[in-house]
Length: 217
Image (cartoon, rainbow, N blue to C red):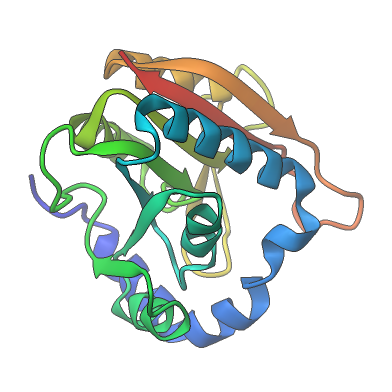
């Protein structure tokens, strides 16, 4: 599987802002109780599957603060990110955890090795036509019964499968939740729940956020 054609540009853009990104978002979960609740549910499902022995990959982990949160929930979590600068920050901030440079489209992970995968806003810069390759790779590395939690911004209605928008770092894409759930089903990942979070009036972008939880058959 080859590298997605947008990966290099996105990687370079995040390398350039890594320190600023870490400073801006390292405490972001503190003010997001609904997201913390979904992460907690994800962690409980993973732990109950095999007493917490299996590993969990945080794909697009950035500077590692969510990987550390998963570790605090009792998961054997490690992070993967395309940006070497982000991974370096993650290593420096959380030296007790494992972080790797890698592509979501070509993971250096054995088939069925993981009990869980978190994809928190990590597919937003991937052109929609390339997302199926990433979903297929996630399905490959998940063990049967493993769970995926994927977060993304939603489109403005069911008539729109995807929408692009002007992200500060690089062009990004919003997804219709039902369309993305259907894509997961095509790769053997069945939805078990979803949460839709409405934007605050003060948010710069008035997008719904969706957290979709799926299980590999």
